[in-house]
Image 1 (cartoon, rainbow, N blue to C red):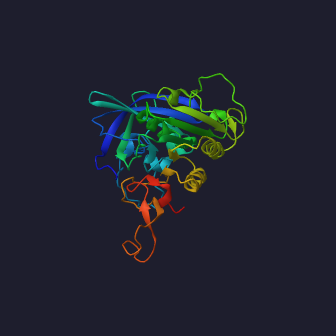
Image 2 (tube, rainbow, N blue to C red; image 1 turned 90 degrees about the horizontal axis):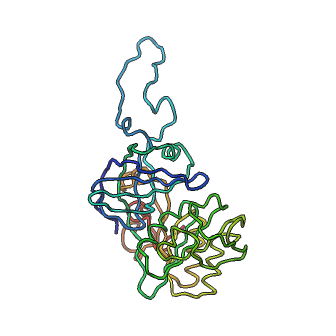
Image 3 (cartoon, helix red, strand yellow; image 1 turned 60 degrees about the horizontal axis):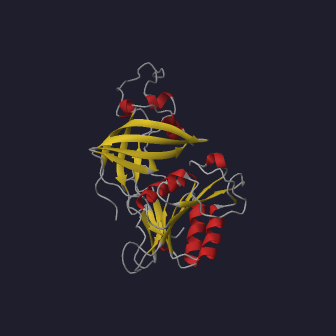
Length: 319
């Protein structure tokens, strides 16, 4: 169930740290931020907050000359809409909270975030969406993150501290892996050992498997290939959590369903509002009863990634 405790906040930048090629960890401090859980996300304003509410001035053109453009969004590219980002971590200090956002620069919005400096201000809407359901006592948690789908796995690892868990982290190449590799031991191209060589997971007692498409570090191949081998060799009583590129998540779902393993997927969709207003983040899911609305008589319907998700069961998704 989605949380109803949300609000609009003005956050202060405490750190903006380059992690690897094109990736940054943005640390934001907020006052009285509601409680959050792994899987939830926030919407960030990716433009100067001092200009975000500036509606400009009215004018009339009477001499058939073009008016002089002054508004920021008319003179250069500006991110008009907020951008959704998964929570990668949280720390509470009295009434203040720090949240971690890990992003990759892919457009004008994330480029704006990459250039933020300490004490800059950022508009935050959240927390939004539902959350991962933690594993039962006798289950091993398997975290599968690809690219910018890795951040919610880091927050989940915080909540799994002391429990049985292993993380699979995949990227195209090592310098696109937004993680700290601390163990100098070389991994072979066929290596799916779960080791403690990713600092962000290791500090919570979560071992990890690293994959790169080009094999520069870790298992050479897709993260889903390493996952499949691990499941077939270890045969754990497990629940899988995943976030990343949609083709990767589809494959993780197929792997889990074929083995009868529970799988929770944090889907990614473009969102304009994050609150169910714009209806832009539809995703097709199964209906438990075709005779019930919506779409009576059909065994599927649409749900919203922002309010019904972003976490869905793999068995419910119709990609």
